[in-house]
Every structure is written in C-alpha cells, then in structure tokens.
Length: 223
Ligand code: TIU
Image 1 (spheres, rainbow, N blue to C red):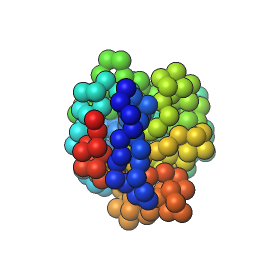
Image 2 (cartoon, helix red, strand yellow):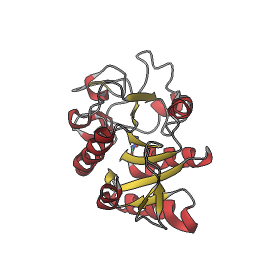
Image 3 (cartoon, helix red, strand yellow):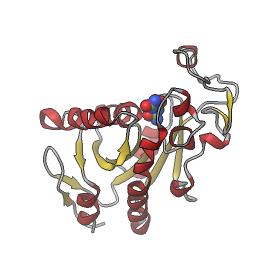
Image 4 (cartoon, rainbow, N blue to C red):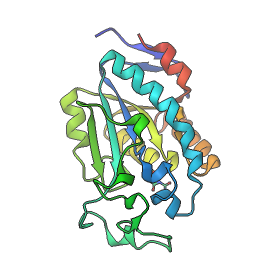
C-alpha cells in the first residue's frame, strides 16, 4: 500500500494509512432512520438522520473503489431478547419497546425488516456486519478480533447517532488504541445541538477521543 496521506481535520491533521484505515458505518438501520422504527418509538424526528445517508454512501463508494476494509454495525438483539438487558428494554415509557411489533417488524430484532441497514448503504458481500447489543460496538461483539485480523489500526467513522452509538464506539475504540476520524456530514443526531457538542467533545483537549473532518477533506486526501 501507499504511504500515509494527510486529511485536514480537527484538532490537527489526521495521517490516514491506506489499507489500515477501515470505514466503520454505525447503525444506519431503518429502525433509526425511517418512521415506525425504534428511533421514532422514542419520540424522535427521524428525518434528521436521513441527511447522513448520501455522505456515508460517498465514503462507501470511495472505500469500495480502493478495496479497503468496510465494516457495518447494527444495534440488534436476538429474537428471544436474551442479549437485551431488562434495564434497556424497560427504560422509560416508549410507544413500543425493543422486541415489540411495529410496522417494520419487531423493534431492533435481528432479521426483522426494520433492523436492516437502509438499502442505499446495504453491506456488499465480503463486508463485515457486526450485530451489537449495546451502544458501543466493542461491547459483547467480535469487533476487536475482526479489526486485528484485518490489520486495521485506524477507524474512519460514519453513522448514527452521533452522541449515542457513534460517540460510545469512538470512546471504546480510543481506549483500545485506534485512531478515529469522524466524518462530519456522515453522522447525524435527533438533536443537532448534541451532534455539534459531541464533535467538540471528541476533538477538544488535543483530540481526547479522536479527530473530525468534513467529507470533502477526507475524499480529497485519498490516494
Ligand atoms: N437513541 C439514539 O439516539 N441512539 C440509539 O439508541 N442508538 C444508536 O445511536 N445507534
């Protein structure tokens, strides 16, 4: 592979290593992005998340064209909910709970229509899909072993929602020694102010969690 390339990022340049930098697309599932799913059941305006689809697709196209590693995650549970802590399922007073049947099937249950990644971003054969019962993608998943097997040391991160599963995953990855770059247009939140704040939290203090950059800075840097 070629040597590192420099992405103009905050808080300072990100030295992206071709072939070592995986694209990690977090939870771009119908259950978060479309009406009638888990995100809507919590009272959220899901249309706010749809802006992340096209920029994430641009990253996928770039990674796929170069043959670089792509991984997707899905927040999901087994049909018997054995991997869903009662504290998660019973929290609050949502319209529907995890495992309840909605218009896209049972919320956040593997194999149900709503659990699928949105069609624009669906995984291609050979791409890794990690089913994760938590918000962070390392908790109770094979993600760490998978990244090690691929020789990945850096994560370029997209997906939803910025301050929940994306930030949790970036913090977990940071603690495991990965350099993480969040692509700003390729992530979204039900709370735009939380998205902005999460990005600031990540890059503050000399990149205490990682880096952030606009999509154009990433795409224009790729060899
Ligand atoms: N509710 C919310 O903002 N997010 C989640 O529940 N999961 C993810 O972020 N994927």
